Length: 153
Ligand SMILES: [Zn+2]
Ligand SMILES: [Zn+2]
Ligand SMILES: [Zn+2]
Image (cartoon, rainbow, N blue to C red; front, side, top):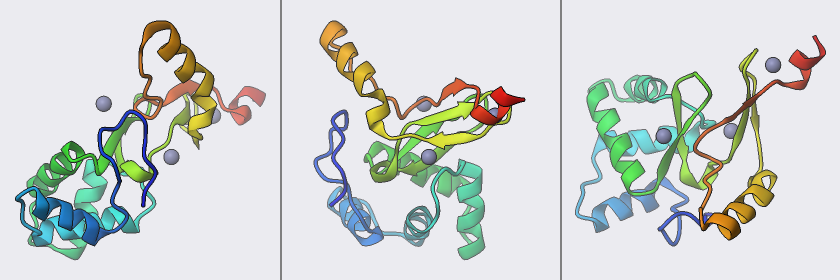
């Protein structure tokens, strides 16, 4: 059972390729090769990949799958709440499994990414909710700044 995030509407996040394919079938979709391979790539890799990266990895396993199909499947998985995207500073959008998503800090000088826990934003999240009734999603945008190595230079 995956972690349940407060701001997400889904009750339980799928933990395996087969659980997601079951969700797709339950919502009337088909467990096609392109969907299965994309899910295998998402569950097997380290996360933080662009749509192009994912397209290349799918093509390496299933050359018959067109890149536009990969993009469409990615959109579909995002609508289902299985995948989320995040903006890494000025760089490209990255995709990862919603169950493994987390906030990021990104160095505006060297591009280093720090994978941060949700708790780092606990005060911000609680205060924004209490004061403004606003639910902050700290995972959607990386926080820009300067890493310790660049600050020392
Ligand atoms: Zn976005
Ligand atoms: Zn840096
Ligand atoms: Zn990360």
